[in-house]
Length: 258
Length: 381
Image (cartoon, each protein chain N blue to C red):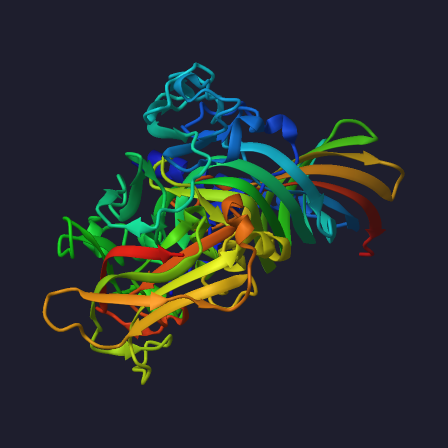
């Protein structure tokens, strides 16, 4: 019995030691020798992951204010090759796009009629303008391939600080019920639905970085948001929409004095 | 005057939000097998026709030029929705002395629609001068009434109404029936079996919300643009049919019951008097076209346009006592001269517009006002 007690206490003591050692290692790994100022382009759009078959063509696309600005800090060195980064970015995610849809089935509200939330089919051109400002906090793992090249991957949480979404339809008609009913011309429909844009997003990011010299780098990252950008009921919005952006930035290192 | 309660000027199509997409055209997939089963347009060369063919959701009307087209073996050619098929096929000669039915099936095979294709090779498609309101049909889907007339036993389009627009005032959950609509048939006839019944209806909370609380019962010579029901209701009416005689008076029989409470466009009680109206207008459609680009008067300019040559108007505020119809005859008042030599050319049109609420065009009237009309006749000189 005594022997057992001793072994147990030894084990405990050794565990405490081990923990203390690990902890001191951990503390040393946390380091912040520099911060990086990062500015560049943020190009992309809000799109279904897979474009539905009812979309027959994309008629036009243009980005809106496609810029991002932020600061970044490596905060944890895992080993020689790996380290972790975090920071804070302001991103303008905006686009204008036009698409032609054919027999798109969804819920339709005809204003000022009892036809609210009835199923129908929509055919026509749709123009959408969506522009959201996000404050983003990423956590990124970086792997050094060699002196010059790094690979990056991580997750980011974004909080929207300004949202807007509007658009209209052209040359459009709807059919209520089934596709053999009378075509109803849609003379002038417009929508302004900023309030259905979700206030946050969580995204996966993947990319690569090239060190131009000691203090300058250029980085490209693909951002895919997991969260459906719109929080309308699924009947109204059968396809989920995601922030898909390519972020191309120039980073400028500032050493931190200790 | 007509009043159609089509206040649905804008729609918010939430699903549209879905259509926001990146410009990655390579992501565009092959189209789904099409679900539409429409005859989209007529393909025969235009010299086969003396008037543009009329294609609606389940009907095609052809106006064949006798000198070029043979009505007994006309190879009607048409375009279908992408991928759709039809029996008979496009371009196969058919005998159009009687209406021919075409079955159109969608590409995915799930939906089909029967089109009735009618043809006439009588160039003189002038409006008749007598209307007995004995012939009507009920819409397959929405169950509203449409009156037509017969000319040499062939049906011809004469009357239309705002019924197709009123569809959007009836809840989609309600079982459709003819008496829900402002324009109906009735067996309470002056002569024959049927007459037209016009009843001012409420458009419900949705209509009231856009200051169009009522829909007057209405019927008119001409056509209603049912594809445009979400546009301006007064502009959806196309009044007038070609007429080849000089009208002298209009006579016929009616029975009127004004509704109890007149309301205005704000749904508030109004001091305006309710009355039924019977209006006939003879006008120069060519002159109208040159100025406005359309051959038809509409709910806005029916009594005011400069192309009007003569009018005959009747307004009655009083309840017709008893069940019997009341006879009327009103002479046309000529406002301007016209060249009678041109009567055969089709440039002159006649519009007859009947309404259970005379101010229905301003959405003022009494729900429940009923105007019955039968055996209308245009007396000519």
